[in-house]
Length: 82
Image (tube, rainbow, N blue to C red; front, side, top):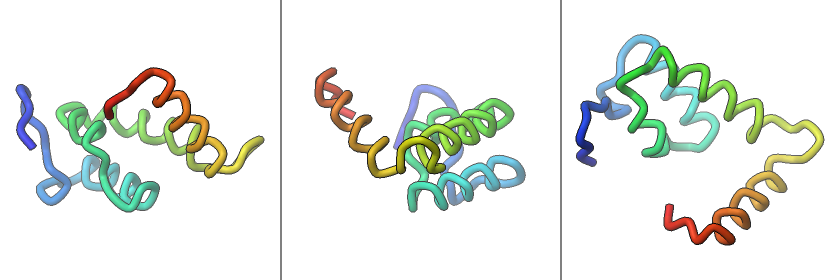
């Protein structure tokens, strides 16, 4: 996919970005494009991925499946095309 700024595809990632992509792959079985778009700043992407993992993936008060259903419903209410 082409962006207006330089990005790094998962296949070309090295170092910390490769580790971050590996964590995303373990979380989502892929690297969502919204995270690839942030690849020009791997120093900021790592903490964002850790936050998403804590918020959406790990079970706390709600299981992951419930959190994903809530997120999908909110996206529908907002007419989100993504």
